[in-house]
Every structure is written in structure tokens, then in C-alpha cells.
Length: 437
Ligand code: TRP
Image (cartoon, rainbow, N blue to C red; front, side):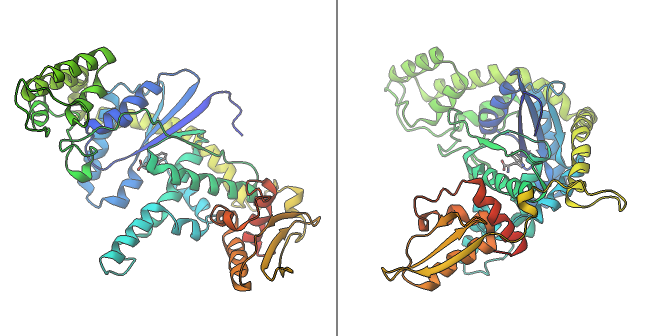
């Protein structure tokens, strides 16, 4: 529904922790580069509502918000060119979260990886499955969908672990649109496989949870010390070194151009000592990060400047969120009592009950079901089941979860069933809402 020709890109950064080199190489640097592209409208925000799901230490939330904002700004993000804001400054986001919550099947959320992982962990530990699982964790994907849908983002650059959340955001948007008219833009995940995955001090992926990170903006001497702590093998000076599998080399490559990497590889083959290799790595990183460090330190010691930047960002963001939220409130029926209903329901939707499921047994002795629309056209044709109960279960899932169940059930459909067709969504969404199929 956006009328502009530009693409809108949006991404959020959860405000727990202090940015490390892995965050810089994997997220901050590519985002800052992308933010300089023309024809793309960029939204970056500090996901502090999301941070509350993982962290109940107020000082830490505040400190991390400052550090992350300062890091992005120091790394070159230009708040005049992008919309840079803090999630909790936009009250329309939790408001939209509620509207979306009311159209989200609980079954979709049950299948979210992060939530399932928490249950699995409890089960493995012999705990109650819901032990220490908050409703916040369960609702995480809905809040994230609101972040994205609020600003009609087309593209959402994320790590691979977030792809399922984007699929959920699309599902939720689709359901909302079917109920209330085409209002939400279906976003797409953008996963950049070329972005370097940085190893940490111990050679595993650099990650806070492995405690193997190198801070992005520690003082120069501390950066040097941390780099000296990268694990290497025990080869002596003069012995040729392997670049393959070397954390030291991988980190270097993430900061160097091809020619520099090639000459570093040659130094490895020629038997450079690990001490010298680490010194070179330190210098290469410091060459890139050093000039940003001063600005970072300035911002950290002047939080009011960062606050002002975020407030200006929030104002820009709310200039879009406020009118859009008003439109959505009206659409769902939260409106002045004298106001006329500007119905956007399609004719198709306002007709009576039309579609139906049929369960039957074929001559082959097996049990089938099909879903037909008003005109009797078959939308979904199942394969044969061994028992009527199995066929019934599949039908029940479609009735109780709507189109969210389609992907899971795909194997029990005949190949002639194209689960992506609009007609199927339309019918299942109505069934889900109105229980009339
Ligand atoms: N869940 C994301 C992460 O952990 C952070 C996030 C919150 C986000 N809301 C978002 C990312 C909206 C993209 C769009 O990385």
C-alpha cells in the first residue's frame, strides 16, 4: 500500500549487552554501508521492549541502550539520512502489538523456535515445561511483527535465526489484511550470507553467550590485550602457519581488503610468529575502529546528546506511526461512536458461509478430506489417510489454526493443491475467525 517508489528497510537491535567486534562486522558495518544507498529508506531502532524479555536489570538496559546507540552513531550512521529511534518512545508499537495479538493464532506462537527451545530445555532438565518462561517470551514474535508492520517495511535485514520471526510477521499481516482490508505491507527477510561470521577469542563464533568476545570500543590498550588473547596453535616462530581454521586469520580478513589478506596469508606461510601476527591484526583493526573511538567516548560521556538524537528520531517515526495507527484503529472498529464504518471488507468476505470441508472414504478403503469453495471448486485435496481420525485431525487443525497450519500440512495434500493460493487463505481465515466452515 505504500505509494512511494523507494524501498523501506527496517531493523532492530536488542539493547542487552555491549557491542563487540562480531556485532560490528555482522550488523553495524553492513547496516551503516547500506544506509548510504540511495532509493532505500532506512529505519534502525533500539529494541528495548524486546530487551526486557531477556533482562530485568534496569541499569543494564539503560547502559546498553546508550552504548548501542553511541556505537551505531560512532560507526557512521547518519540520523539525518535515516530514521533512528528507540522502540519504547513509540507508544503506537505496543498498541499495534495488541491488535496483532488478537489475530494471531496461539498455535503459531507455540511453534516459535525460541519458545520451543525454552520448553525443551526445561523438559531436558526435568522441570515443568513452563518453568521461568514468561508470556513476554511467548509474545516476542508479535511485538517484532508490530515493529515491522508499523512502518510498512518491505525488507528486514536479519540474521538467519530471525527468519522464522519474519515468516510469522507475514502470516500475522496476512491474517490482519484478510480481516480488515489490505493495510499492512508483507515484509521480507533479507539474510546476507556474505557478511563475515566472526570467530571469537576461542575460535567459536563470537558471541556473548560463549564469553569469547572482543569489545568494539574498549580503549586501545585493552583492545591490544584482548587480541593477544586469541587462541592459536603451538607452532613456533619460523614454522609455517595454517590460515584455514585460524581465528586470527578470519578476523583479519573481516577487516582487510583482498590484497592485504593475501599478504597476511603469505606471512603465515613464511612462518610469522603468533605474536607478530597478533600485533598486525591489532593494527589493522585499530586502523578502522580507532577514528570512531573518539566519537564513541564523547557520546558515552554526553548521554544527553544521544538522547536528543533519539528524541528527534522518535518524532520522525511517530509522524508515520500516529496517523497509521489511527487508520488501523478505525479499521478494526475502535472509533468514534458516530463515525460511519468505512468498510473495506471485500464482497467475498461479506457473503454468507460458503466453503466446506468434506470427509469421505474412497473405494481404495482410505479416508480423505477436501475443502471446496462456494462454487464447489476444490481448494484443498488430501491424500488418503489410514483412519478417519487422522483425516479428522488434519481438518481440525485447519479449522482451529487457519492458514497458519498450511505449511505443516503440506505433505498430506495432493500435489495439485497449491497452498499459496489466495482463495485458500481467504476461506481458511474466515473459518478461523467465524468458525463457519
Ligand atoms: N529479534 C531481533 C534480534 O534478536 C531484534 C528485533 C526486534 C528486530 N524487533 C525487530 C529485528 C524488528 C528486525 C526487525 O536480532
